[in-house]
Length: 430
Ligand code: HOZ
Image 1 (tube, rainbow, N blue to C red):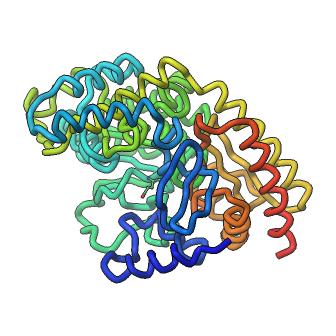
Image 2 (cartoon, rainbow, N blue to C red):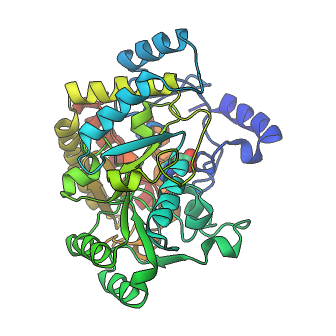
């Protein structure tokens, strides 16, 4: 495949932008080579500046569940922008999207829109601390909650991919109140609550992790999280920036049957535009300014064009729920890749929940960051490029989740399995 125009465009970007990208997850640092530069996207496909077409399993890292340039979303945003692109004053689409979110997720009684997932988790954390009057927060190694200072400790996603799970520039004071535990480690959770329970403001986690690769939660772990936070008066925050409206219309918490106190959202609720949100129990949300004393603000929060894209996306998901079909296609993909990897003799674990999945190059069950790190990332890099050469675009890191979109069909799954069969044979050959 000729990627010379992408290489030139990337080299040009590197002159004026650090590392040539506006977010490190895109930089291909973990798989070698330079990123493809995108010219356009439609349905299940990305098209690069060289004219190559790729079946897209990244979907902008999650938002594009309907596929790219879905007609309903395109029409809604064009109509919205004709009415002006930002007001800095209340508008009805903000309330309409809030109502859709509140109807979809029973634990979310009120919601506040922001402009990114990072802002959502940062604000949820401040609110939890303001509400409880406590400072300590528990996070889990390998979970990623955006680039919030207090949570940039043992972080997943591109922080992990690029080897800086604890970034320079984060003052020690910002993370002194952050306790980091192993994901799925119920015993450690009990111990920490026993020692510090009355000082813990919140526990934040991805209820299904996407940011160390896909890692599901254990049943006992989840039950204990809810029980301990209740017992000690701490808030349970589900970071559903990736899983919200992805694993089900009501997110991971619908699938798991859980009721967190606060939920953070992003990605899908913006339909491909910059939107984040945090919401939850009304008594907690009423502490947010101007209803309450906890300050949080944003000029572009509730932006009307982004709201229109979010509304169109959620309405489409509600009218034509793709979740069963996505899960079935995910199961077919899982079965096909499992057969291919077994046939190739490559040690692997394939984790999947609904339309999110990760192929780990390890024989160890992947349940937390340490087990994720047993993956052979060189093999992953080889697999990634072999798939690229066969027109399949996967996340460019072992420590990310891949996403199916509703624009994909059974034929796309069959094509991907065929590509994986060849790619895994090449990986096995070394
Ligand atoms: N939160 C995204 C998935 N892990 C990464 C997106 C980015 O950093 O650009």
